[in-house]
Amino acid sequence: STLDAFNIRKSFGDVYHDFSVAVLIDNTRRNYRYGFKLLDVGIDIGTPDAPNPDAYDTPGAPPWGTDYIWIEGDPKELGKLTFNGVDYSIFPSPWTVDDVIVEDNSVLWSGTGDLLDNWAIFETVGGGTLSFDTIYDLEDYWDFGFVQVSTDGGYTWTSLEDNEEYSTYDYDPNAHPTVIANLPGLTSWIPDWITLTYDLGAYADQDILVAFRMVTDWGTHYGGWWIDNVYVDDTLISDGTDASVFKDITDILPINNNFTVTFVGYIYHGKGNQKIEHKVVSMKLDEMTESGWFELNKVLKNADSAVMLVTFDAPEGFTGYADYT
Image (cartoon, rainbow, N blue to C red; front, side, top):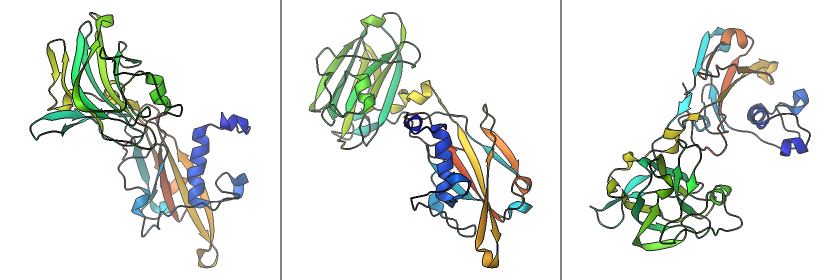
């Protein structure tokens, strides 16, 4: 890894948490653990009396980002502060219902944007034929729609090829790794409705999960992927009017949230309080419940003000926020 190449015996998480403190205080003591030697880096979180809401106002903690929250009152006079992080996160499918032709012709829509990995999953029994009507507008060989099957409860997925041969293994050499790892899939522009069919015979009599999965890259994106009239043999799965019949991948495999909570105490000295010392201390959280507590008047007994830093140590590739109180 990059850290190993520089002989740094810390994990990415360790480095990030030191960095999150450094951008707040830029304190060059302790061998620059919380400061910058060559860079002028800082953030504006306001003051205890006038906090900057941009430092924390999006609900939840950002993935490998940090909320900076001023503690109200004098830490020396405050008692128990309790942190409760949501241990697991489950989200609805980001696919929605869209009227693309006429008002009463609702269809499923993947959404559009950069770095999407949008799932719409349903349960069925293998052995028949999956069919659906579709149009799509995807950046050629960069953005893809995948039709996938899982036989192990969503831990692994296999991409299927349609019988009509619209699926491709071709991709841009610089395509997103998630795209490359999940080929074959659908890409390019199909402006007129077509019907695609997929053979589920290899999964006869098995309980399976079937997913429509939309993956985009970092840059250009077009309209997305639309699906209607989803059937397995003669069984109607969706007529496009209700996206709630589909699940997100987090409904199958909930996100196990991990938080890091750090407090930075400010100790003011000298004429006009111009000299500032800092005390940095992390809260120990229960690994099962992601909860913990501090007696602030003991932990920060010399501090005149304090900031709480909350980071969501997100799993790789996950871009959602994690709630806490």
